Image 1 (spheres, rainbow, N blue to C red):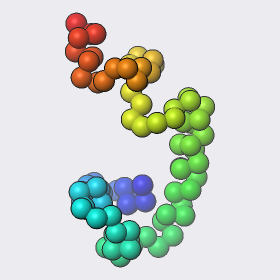
Image 2: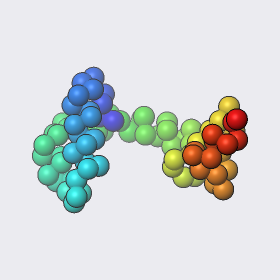
Image 3: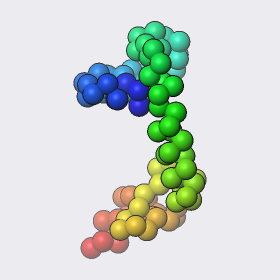
Image 4: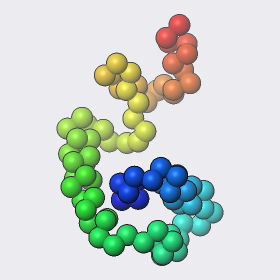
Amino acid sequence: MAIADKGNPEETKKALDDWYLAEKKDYAAFASKYPMNGELKAQEANIQSMLSWSELENITYTPTIFIDGHELPKAYAVEDLKYVLE
C-alpha cells in the first residue's frame, strides 16, 4: 500500500511481482530494494479502516466474492458462475 501510494503503477506492479513471484519470501531483501521511510506508518489508518470494514461486513477470509451484494457461498467457485448466470 505504501508503494502504491507513491502513484507509480509500474513500480507498484514490479514490487508486487518481486514479492509474490519470489521463490523465497525475504522481507529484509525486499525492504532493502523498496525502502519506506515512514510511509508504512502512514498506512496504519488505512489498514485499520479496512479491518473495521471487513469486520462490519463479516468477511473472515480472502478472497470473498460478492455478486450484487450477496456473498458467493464457499460451496461455489467463481468458475461455477457461468452455469448459474446463464
